Amino acid sequence: MSRKTLIIFILLIIGLGAMSASGQEYSKFGNPLARLTVKDVPVLAEVVSTPKKVYLGLGRRKELPEGRGMLFLMPQNTLQLFCMRDMLISIDIIWIADGKVAGIHKQLSPADKGTFCSPVPVRLVLEVPGGFADLHGIKVGDPVKLQSPGLSWKTP
Image (cartoon, rainbow, N blue to C red; front, side, top):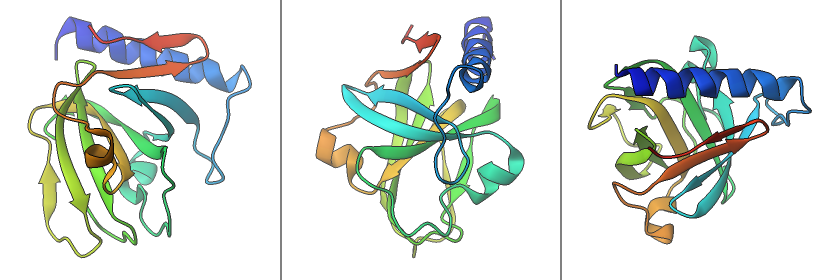
């Protein structure tokens, strides 16, 4: 893991911690909410980082409205494996590295079996409604910006 990536991650965690003391918004599932943009498209994402929350992810959810998502803060910058366990909805998985879209798995269906691997080591993974990437023309290399009270994570 590069020093720059480590510093960005530490600042992200500090900023998310500070949000809880400054009127942080939470989803109805108890997860903190963060605002990000992918390319120039805004997303309001639930942030999960504990093993239990990461394991559950969006499983058992009946809907994920347009403009919403789930941002996974993974413990290590490594190849990440995700699956469609307990999923009831279709999603796109956006793999994020160095403030950019590093890869996309599109239109994953609850019927899809097996695992989906990030194309490069990543620490951030964003799940959005199925078709999001195509609808908004999102592609590898597009910038991802996280903006929350007291923190603005800009692309390098």
